[in-house]
Length: 359
Picture 1 (cartoon, helix red, strand yellow):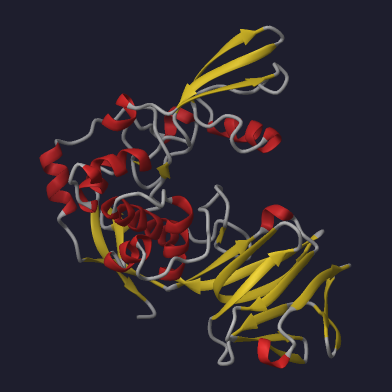
Picture 2: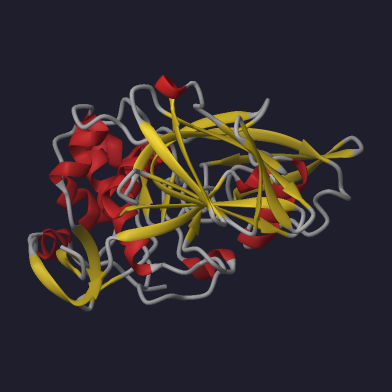
């Protein structure tokens, strides 16, 4: 297991702010949204006092409240998209939603009876096997803000939120293309995504204050992993059966989680836990997909017989790799800056300003 460098060295490395990384990266990301619902129907409508333009085949439709035509109901019909409007039916292989100038727009996207969410960007809807595939193209900083809003505790200190913003941005830049046809999804497979926060909120201010800053290892941005709560010591990918990546994650002490462990208990059947073991993240995710995403919160647990079931007793939430959000919040409350937080959880890295292909 690699050993971490001295804290003084980590702090000096964290002062490398504003150094330019060599590669250029586009600012837009494509994110598949609401895919967990496998829905054959979605509804699009603009936010109040705005308009969106829907384009499908040779049809163009403006949705706005003042016209009385302010939503479109989109269905999957075989291998094509069918939409109902006041002016009649639309059938097409794809459908797009954007602003009047073909740029980003503010709109609501919903799965009827299940979820409604607000987005800022452009939308593309296409058929995908037995469901609709909805892809939002959005500006990188909008995506970062949306992720910070989804992944962070709303009461987290501003320096912890800044650290989260840098980690999320690094992941978006370095891990593009995780899915066929789009870059990321909006689940734990990639990063959660929610409505972007207002600029004046702590989350919005954290994103603005760190705009363009990413984590780099050997001058190259890397996909920074993070976890809700570790067990008092972060893990390396190898410890939970994950392949090594460009950055060699270290196993580091997390004072807060060691002193305030997030303890949990779960009961499962022997059949459900047949492949479960603490050294396998893939096995943990397999049982979570089967029984629910909070069934086995972490890889730090003991498993014992409890009658005809198995009792799991563990600590922590998430895979335990990289930045620990609970520990980061505690460090910030004690006066640590976001750079110091990042230097602790990602040793041997620097915080750099990335160069965009579309400034």
